[in-house]
Length: 408
Ligand SMILES: [Fe+2]
Image 1 (cartoon, rainbow, N blue to C red):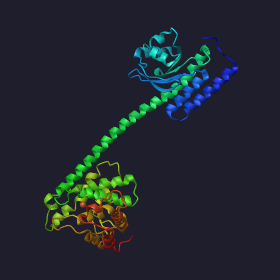
Image 2 (spheres, helix red, strand yellow; image 1 turned 180 degrees about the vertical axis):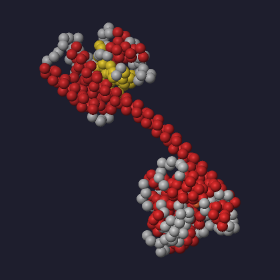
Image 3 (cartoon, rainbow, N blue to C red; image 1 turned 120 degrees about the vertical axis):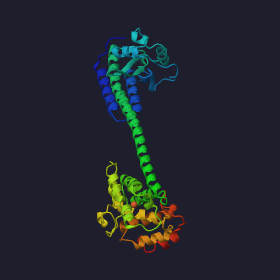
């Protein structure tokens, strides 16, 4: 090691390099690229032809290469140190000469030979807040000159800069790990949540021997219409859930009433018609992540002319989601077998919708509903939900005949 070199020119050059290094490290570039360019700057500053940066893992004590230059082979036993050696390195916290008798070198064990084989000469450990994060090792100077005390000081400062970069990266990685861990937990909860709702829907449908899968169909039909109407992904999810639960109030209605083949008495009718309010009462106690679910359930039997139940609301007073569900609920009831009648054909169901247009059903909902059907028949949608369940083949010509009189 020769004397201290403090020539003004050298000092200015080095300050300049440090400023550039600071810029490199603080700019939001890819981490590996930042480390690599920092290594090049360090090597350039000392005219060293070889250099390597390792990241240290406190868990297994291993140093892993992040960037290197001028080294042909970095395979081999590698570098591994225990906790005690790491603590001694942190306490020492200054660059060391690999060929010196410094006690820190002895702590490296077989790692010393590994580093020598790589051509390393000076080591600067990367330490932040009493934590060993890595190591930068550079070779002899190209000129063959010794490293000076000043070089050691400069390398120490440059090492600090790289340490900060490594530190932020390590923090970021830990945060990402936590984030992913939490995301996994969230996904699990979400799955449980959906499974529970689906189990509820299945329990509701199980009460009615004829309406197997009714809630699922109302759910997917409603979502398809809402999508056609340009609803947000979140609101579509809300109506999908609402569709699954819209008849939940039926769990309080006697099974014999739900499955009765003959006309209902007025009392039975009253009991059956109480299901939207019961459903509302059940669902309004649940804090859903989507808005409007209890009201959509309460109002899914309202009619736009005000003759529906339970609130006898007119068109604009009925939540849009409930107006969608009112149509698809009735449409599914028409196109599936009932205890008191076989299912209607697609044409008959559409005729019913036409007959009750603007009285029971809202034109603002019927139009997008028809539009979805049209797109499904013309294969313009990826996952058709309504047409495949119609028990009959619908080609574009037949469809346009059936839909005659409906607005495009
Ligand atoms: Fe209902």
